[in-house]
Amino acid sequence: MRTLLAPMAALMLAAAPGLAAAQACPCGGGTRIQQPNDVATLLGNKWVCATAGGDRWQEFHAGNTAAGGALTDYKKGSGHATDPTKVVGSWQVTGNGANTRAEYNYGPGHVYAYIVCEDGASVNFCGATNVLGATLNPAGVAAVTPCGPV
Image 1 (cartoon, rainbow, N blue to C red):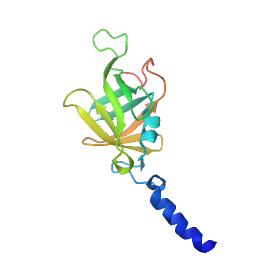
Image 2: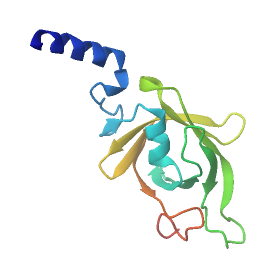
Image 3: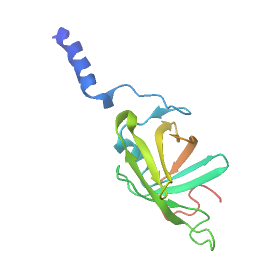
Image 4: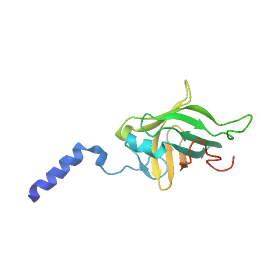
């Protein structure tokens, strides 16, 4: 019986690559998320709060499946006269395994794909521009200052 267990275990791991050891994040720290549903669950129906190169993002990810949904930018809040909260595009999860990406579509010529990594309580997005140390807020799309003061 013992002689069969090792070959069977090796065969099971080869047949199920999603069960293989976690991969390190290619930017920042943490663990790369390689399953589309895991990325969707992590980001879906949450605000992603992030900064990079002087830019700040406060984007609500509607939906919690790989199909994604609307992407809402908080801007300066729903009551602001000149820069109100509004839908700015869409998001979805593409690929599988090592090719899993969160994809953001802000309109023609403005589609960006990122490898997503969990790093403790923060999230790293690895792409053409790395966005490190993002935080998530499950407050809902109507949240007031979901990522802190603007």
